Image 1 (cartoon, rainbow, N blue to C red):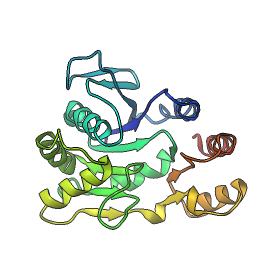
Image 2: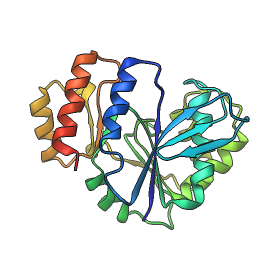
Image 3: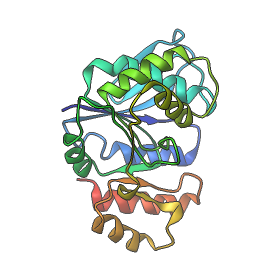
Length: 225
């Protein structure tokens, strides 16, 4: 089994540089998983994709309302035939890959799979998990809607609700730890994550820089391997 992880990335803010540095310390820890920072580069030809080690650059504009959706679709198209599963996440989310992999081994290749932290009818952009079958559908439909504007996770949910006859959304909220909704200390949160075997950890993308740094370093120390 091969897994590609696409991490929405940029160096524009200090906290993003911090979060990127944490990813670099564990992103290559499992041979079944290839992680890529996903960025845009307007010096590249339009819609082209350039892969170098743990970095994918895409020739399109960036931004929440257009760029993230577009670079996701183009990167998935480039990687489509090389992997069995595809994860679309971001810099502020921490993954416990040692627990994720056994779960993915139990996912059917024949049926559509679209999972992660679920809102009513779409998976939040920090935790999108697709198998190859569903990824192929998303690429085909996403290229047709390439010029549309809108938030990437909602657009992906809309595409898959329309294109997949059997609803394939799988809520993995019980395997996510959403820091913003928790009121416990870092130490108690770590214990909850361990006790419940949660493997998708949404930290504080908009919170205090020092607190975010403390959270990420604690996660790295506890769960790096």
